[in-house]
Length: 63
Image (cartoon, rainbow, N blue to C red):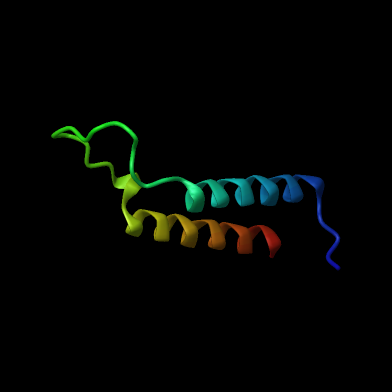
């Protein structure tokens, strides 16, 4: 097992929380769509890149 600093574990814990929020966030809002409601955060590509960035940051923290 690696001997790591406590801040690394806090960072990993926070990244897991953000990762779960990104995955479990509903992509459709409960309000009716307006003409300007085209949020990038609801796109599957944005979710995919968010997951990729979180994985890269997690690997950097572990190394």
